[in-house]
Image 1 (tube, helix red, strand yellow):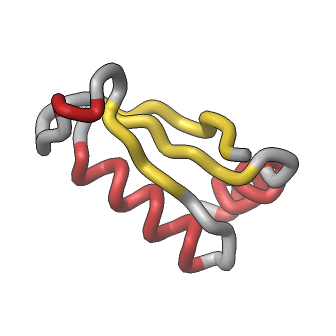
Image 2: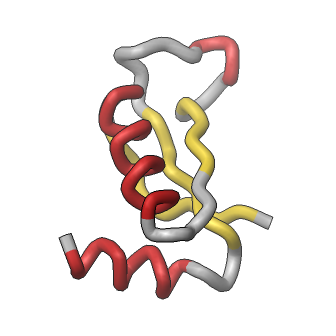
Image 3: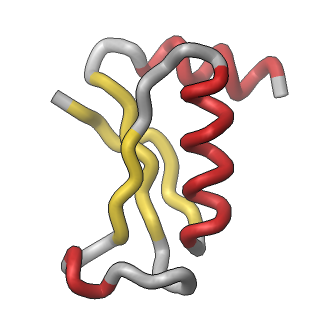
Length: 64
């Protein structure tokens, strides 16, 4: 199960957050807000982390 961690305004920032989290050993997923068919570089995205591991994502965020 995945839970929402962060909302970002575009694909570039979503990929940056995903790379940061995964670089610290925490799996992450990104999906566009709304319909999956709206996938594009300029649509808002949501970064997801595994349920129960949100505290790890918060710790990674504090280190940055």
